[in-house]
Each structure stands twice: as C-alpha cells, then as structure tokens.
Length: 154
Image: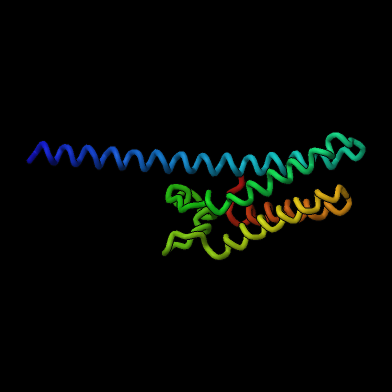
C-alpha cells in the first residue's frame, strides 16, 4: 500500500510541476508575442519618419501584415494567468474573477486591436501613405488604450 501511495504521490508531483512549467512558458510566450507587436509598431513609426525612402516604405506592408497576424492570436495568449493576476492589479482586470475567462472590457480592447490591424493591412494594398498614416495611428492608439488599462508602468 505504501509503495502505491508513493507512486501516486510521485505522479501527482510530476503532473503539478509540469503544469507550473507550462504556465511559466505560456507567460513568457505572451510576453514575447507582445514584445514582437511593440517591435513592429516601432519599426512602422521609424519608417514613416523617413519620408523619401521608398525601399523602407515597401517594408510597411510586411510589418503591417505581421501586426495583423499577431493581433489574430492575442485572444489565445491571454488564458488565465493566476501568477500575473496576483502580481498586478491592472493585469488582474484582464480576466473575469469568477469565470477566469477574458473580461468583456478586455475583449473589447482585443477586438479594437484586431480591427485596427486588419484595417491598416487593407490600406497597405493601395500604397498610399497618406491614407495609411491615420490607420497606423489608430492601431497605435489601440495598443496605448490597452496598455493604459492593463499594463503596469515599467
């Protein structure tokens, strides 16, 4: 009987440790995805500051496509994170406290980000920087709005 209990306990410890390990990786993955979003936004901003550089302007569609792709997966990377929720009051507002699902307010932020990224991507097809600039501005504002509500200041 004792050997069976040790085996069960050992199995439980392995499962518990691997769950924690997976959660840590999920947290790190979310941070890396959001860091990629920030890098693409910064790249777009720097490209737009170089008015006459046609080569760099041709990169806008690539960065914008990456933003749209990353926006499409943001829904999946914000699974409930108890560690983050305990660490940050702002981040805790991402999830409904009862259901642990994404809160309706955070879902609106995700939807706005995804919509702004899609719109910016569509406008890159016309190659008209003057029409694209406001869409990229709206995309940046969607990022800022979410950060203001859910991200602690660094």
